[in-house]
Amino acid sequence: MFLDDFYTLTDGRIRISAHQASQFAKRIAGDYNPIHNPDARRFCVPGDLLFALVLERFGLSQQMSFRFLSMVGDGTPLCFSEQPDGRIRVCDESGKCYLDVERSGETTRDEAVVEAFTRSYVAFSGKNFPHYLKPLMEEKGVMFNPRRPLVIYDSMGFCLERLEVPAPGLEFVDSSLEVAGKRGDVLLEFRILADDEPVGTGSKKLVVSGLCDYDPEAMDEVVAEFYRLKAAYDAEA
Image 1: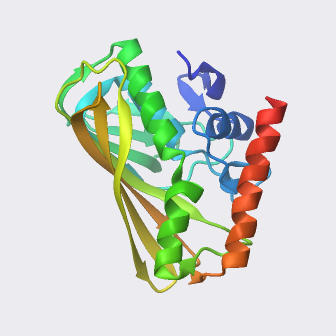
Image 2: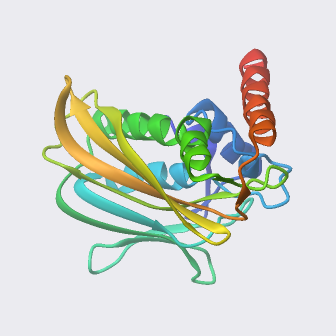
Image 3: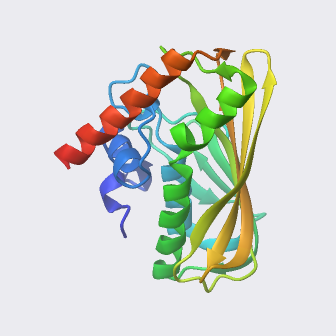
């Protein structure tokens, strides 16, 4: 599978190194959030990599919801398990749960279908910043701390009318930002397409911490740094 480069399986446990996580973020998701850099003080594995691994191991269901409960660090041994009630949980050896998944409806394990859906969603999801977040924050007059930008993946979910979608596309529909003090809750809504016809809907929730007043110059610098990192990675790749 296309995810083989981004994790190591040892004694039935999945380990994701900081390097593997960073490569997935940049190569597959186009995500240059500094929290996924190997040397980041608060490094964490991209939620989209955990999402992708769940689909690879358990298949794609018509209705799925993902709740990200905690951040996964460098090399944490993870167990991906199905519960008696059908839920999927991603936990470490002490039982701490990082991801809880609910699903219903039909399920497909067709590798081509699962990979196509995974790639399509991850490519959409990786565009959090600056594509969707910057206009929202500018509109609300707030932004994250430019010295320590922190955007956390809270949850996502989707509903598919059918699973036979060999080449799905995701289309941005709407977004909103609710501000409560130093915290902001972002909701991104999307439509799932097949041959330009809608076959499903979904949404993704993010939490932005450490909000402060919007500073156009500071935001321009953060955006410029994003594109600098992207250009540097593209040149190296």
